[in-house]
Length: 328
Image: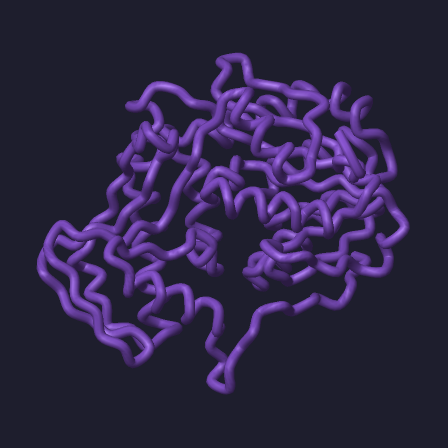
């Protein structure tokens, strides 16, 4: 395994607390509609729970995207070309990434993830499956520009962002992320990105509230993380998970709902919630062709190819870094 030094962008205070996590949680709990950015769902436990979610029957996106990656390998190879450094934003699943790497003959693989232990395990797994492929894991917050390892500096890059993770962000934040990806990957880059499609409400709600309760555990794990890392006293047993379709914004919303009036402390500050009040923890926006194109173009990426699964549930889009022009 060709391993570079991990780049640590997490800002820890003298007690080892992530300052950004604390700031986001305290600001979010102070709002009238309490809300915490979805990226904080993905500590090591949350990342593993998400991998478990991808295996439940109701959660179709992983199966649909995997179908595309399995069946369109030759088309990917032709459109992308060999020798690119594949930079995966979120080290992701051991299922999808090998399908892409097998198809396109990459020059290197650079997984980026904020969850260090999960990142290193995923990188080791990929390195074992592709013993001749240089693997350079980078522990980083990829919502900001990331300095990539020197070993891949001169290679053309392919960003890989599967799973419709872009849908977890409101449009403004999604555009900011796409622009930071553009800065990380440079001018000759391409981006292969998954985007889930709008479909029947019942199918969508079931996908985010599975009968086995895995998604509920994933959602409530955030409250446990707050208690553990921020000296919180949230009574997790007095909350339940709820998935809601918001048609105005074309998104599924995940909420942690208080079952009773509760009071608790986080990082020395006190908060109160009434029964039925919620902490909004995640969005999952769904797209059609026009909204997907608009988002990518706003993020300085130009769509050049698109693939869907046989049932038309999910799309994988290839885009090129938009060349800056002084005028239309």
